[in-house]
Length: 131
Image (cartoon, rainbow, N blue to C red; front, side):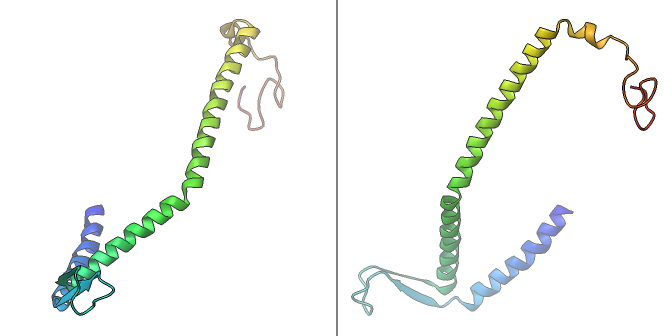
């Protein structure tokens, strides 16, 4: 299904790209000389579709970079919270280990029969399951 949807999107997109390239194939000069526009010392002559596609690619890269730099605060906070969570996990494991050690033998405690506690009589919970 995924390949079908990818083909459903990529084939029309490719056709639009080819039609755009054929319709805009005349040459344009891109000048990087602001002082002499008629005879630039630094300029390049390319087909119009190449210029437009390059500008679009550069725009996407600039937008992605700007977004990445703006989100550095959130990435830093996520790293800090992950380190805090890891530290809390280690503390919890240490506390559990010390609690088990201070209670005595954990297998002996687990083997004790229920004392009739719970919600109802004979150690049953609200749904009637035996505890």
